[in-house]
Length: 387
Image (cartoon, rainbow, N blue to C red; front, top):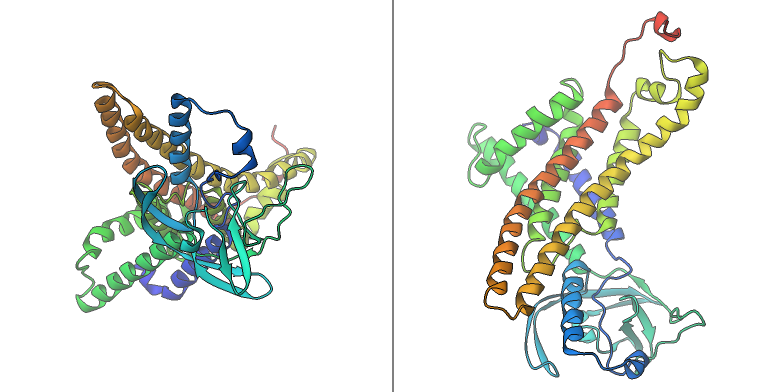
């Protein structure tokens, strides 16, 4: 197996993906927005009707699933005034004139102020970020309505970061075990490796070799395998009640696209750049025009990778969560079961989409790598304009 011959490269690629994702996985809206009861906006707002309350609850339900947060919230029970939440908290890590580490349970799902080493912090209901405040949780706004509270450097293990680390560890242990079983059993996979071995062979024989070539495909196999299983596992976890939406976070898809772009750029051969800056077989005036267009194309390719994965996964999550929210709010003997049936069918479809998006990302990455290392043979007469 190719990925066993370069374990160090596989580890480096996996680690770089985790580091990139760790740095990007704290979006501006890192927690679902909770309106405070004592908010000035709440005092001046008109009372909502029952229909408006249900609509607001549906939107909050969808936001809670799509956005990152500092804890895992599975479900709640009890009265609306005093609900009981079931889930588990994650560590909050802040740098604010020193290191502050505490549990996110201190925030009480965004409704309380957390104290650490004599400083107070809150999760703002304006944008979901953590800010320094006082014991009363005061928010100071400028003339444009922007928060002026001090914002510490947030290095917290959020829900998305936790899942990235979990999946990265799972992939490492899974394929390390597969490698050991190969050594012990004479190149025969055992256990879970029997399921994943055909997928590895498919990526090698149907994606890497045809698109990159027999000569160069081996050095890209570690990356292709890593992104395929990383995206696939993340997509599957996104369909669970854990409420994770890692691949629906544009920061994560951007990190994957940037890694693909960097590998393509730094492993490209001379012919690749020749076809960008001075395309053979084209009149020289056209070469000057085509060069910036081709150069822009190298940036558009990873951008399309980023948007394609993000848009497909976020759209699927929005549709499914909207149907689930509608199912609970539908007060009809026929409408409820029909909504449940439609949500169930779409959930099965999303399982297929989860695998398909991993395949598409890996296939396109292999195409870009293949174009970067393709060897062209040009005769001198190709440099002359066509008849």
